[in-house]
Length: 366
Length: 202
Image (tube, rainbow over all chains, first blue to last red; front, side):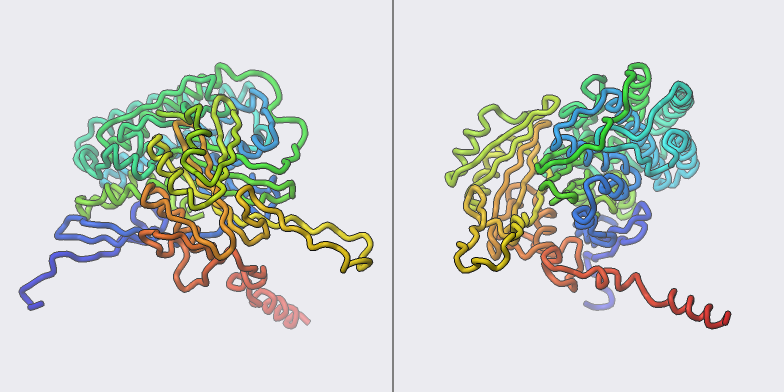
């Protein structure tokens, strides 16, 4: 190559640190000029061997361990794990517990989605909106701290029910918090729908077609933004979701903006679900009276985590420790979709597109 | 979205000439089906059939089912020679459950229903890759290859997924003593400090 010639394509490293969030993932990006041609994803920076650890702990200890796999969807992990345990033991949880599981899940979903759409604003350089979204999210963080005593790992689940209860005072408090949250979320939704800066950076960016979404087996808001109306809460109802009306918003464009708008709409749907739960919450126990024995068996559990379908496989053999616990987090298949989203994108949009799948690296690598 | 068809058992049996054993449970209207495949080579044909049904491969689990524990002998050493060799239990397809065979569970989702196709492979065996049929099998199969010494045949990209190539193969098949495991995290530094403080005080 002479001094006047330049190579047509380059490979640049993106990551592993701080691509969009403070979690490590390493992208080898082939670029031509400013345009991404291909991407190779290299994972493993926070691989901790949690699946192995679950086989060294008792079935009950794993309720605590699984909550520590992830932060933003921390509640979904023990929720699905205990569902698998209950299936093996043939347990039916009290109705009040089923409703309280929905309450815990939807509170976590609102906080998780607000975080993601907030980061989108941050990555577009619209930091005022980022701060505003985080301030709105603080209402839900306060709710978590008040109801569960913690802002992230809420420790709400146990085999046979839940570990918390809502008395009249807490119900009034939660109801007031939702009244405070709802107009703020409407204002946020309006900004994301109409703001020029957001639209310029997110519309038509990071496109994923419906067929690609099916081929990659994507789930959650990533799939619903491509027109795939799959939501575990509706398609395979668990807890009290079969008694509640769950609104599943879908969009067809499959771009960064559609994925963000799905999340914004879901916040509204979650607020409605929480209000319905507060209205319908039946009296009764919050858990089964005794700590149940888990016999030998196998079960599948799945739930709709904030990022999509979370799947658990549990195999027990009558011993204290499970024989195998395996889970697949919603981010796991969604990474693959990034290859399609990033091809043809501009280098400056890489971070926004990566953030649009709401990736969870610690979940993916376990 | 299509759910698990009522005649799934017939369709599975037709796709797997080696034989299948199918059971299912229903919770809150959601069917969870389990299908043991006698011959792991039938896996590709079963995969093709499920792809046509519109199934999505949600997850692949791999494990080594432990061999049943030896029963304690009450009259130790009395008539060791006379006792017949204890027979190793076998799976439906004839794979010995000796603690070294692999169980591979392919968890498919149809609508909201689950169908888990289970194949067994004896130690040193191999299994065909499902990645040519399901893109979603790519990462799970790479993860299985780095955790166990099981060979996944015809995988288009058999690189390590999470573990660095410098790490020894088949980590889940090796016994790693706890002291070795925490070597990097545990030093004498604190103990030295305590001893030094004690020495200084006296």
